[in-house]
Length: 205
Image (cartoon, rainbow, N blue to C red):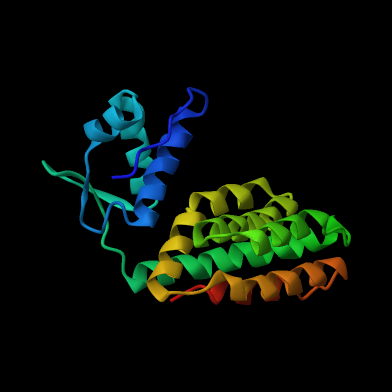
């Protein structure tokens, strides 16, 4: 079993959620396997209360399910689960891009940073983080707080990781599409929203 990272007190709940999410996406906890609250708390050196709160958050994301007298366990994800997430994500990011293209006014330096980091990534997990950071940059650039909140609530990183692993998709091939999208933002192409939509749907099962 891999050792869990040491946690700091600031943002403790977010850190615990990330540890659990990383465990699910990496396969540490397989579908159907129990996640024992007290064991996680002991591993991380925290009380059970923040772990319990993190598990509730994961249940809201439909990553785990809680059964009477059996505790929390990882859901058995299906193609149908994944198929429900990506059209919603694609619609949100299309809207975000449509809003961002006017606000960015051709300034794409922040997007280029993520493309550079993606190209320099040395493992699939790092590639995924930089790819999602690229999409998050577009959502942030929309300036719409409600859209950003809904997008974040979808658990984008988790569902993307699950889809990539399920399909064996190589992110390196997606980097070219990121460059094309960035160039569309640079020239203020009003069709960039549809480009982003189609790009996101290419991750779907």
